[in-house]
Length: 379
Image (tube, rainbow, N blue to C red; front, side, top):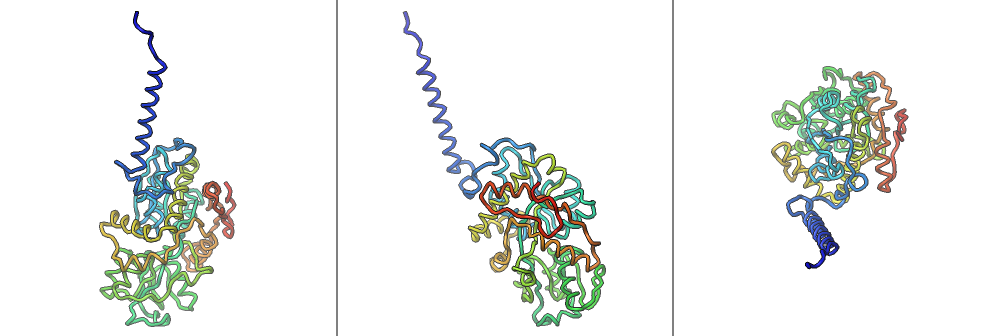
């Protein structure tokens, strides 16, 4: 008679083999073998939700600009900090050169979550009657300068009669410059840009060429355009940061389609967990983050910034989870004074509930939309 079977030993050997296989797989992942895990900051390693639970959307599309003022997106996407929070949800990205185009994409549903300046966010919200977007987080403060030809303009008074570029009619920098002009008692027609100072709306990508050709005498622009002009011989005449209390003002917010927020709040929260961890990593590792942002710009534009440009630009940008809502209200008031916007009702523009849940889970201070009339900080 043959000996009886020994199923317990066979099952135990099988369990041991499976355990070894799982251990090896984990080791390979943590070592980065066949992956970018070894290049991803430690803060990125934990997936969203409990044990990386599956989220409600198959994919999410993120929109942003190839600008240093969108550093959270540049670094968060490149380093995998945002993707790692999405579990099985695919992260898709697309870039823009102007706020209105991104707002159109958000309205059309081709972008779900976007990084964008305060003026286009307010304009998009107001023009839709408050139906198309919500601001769900801050992203960056600062990074805007008035740079000029030092041979023609030596003091602020010398700007009168000169041609100064801004990126676009009604964009955040355009509104800020128009308000600054008005505060000095000078007159400029906002629509045409003609007046005591000629405001020349010029795409940031061609502003350096316009400066070199002499068709503009300076520019009120975000980074890295400001530092590109300095590399071409311009001088910084004014840093917009100096005009604001506490030297902080919102330059980039995170916005989300209301439809996407309603249908996929877990995905929005996962993306925000990624942006919060990205900002934390940027602030803790500024040199590594600067190199990552520059590499991302090279991927998106085909060319990285020269060291003299990025080294000058990078320190002027502060990444922050706080949307600095009081400064958004002030910026919208500037647009009203300039005649570019009727007095807006900003009630409801913020939904900081998802961000505050993320901040609370990470033991960070929460934020509020105080100062805007918004009423939905804890939704």
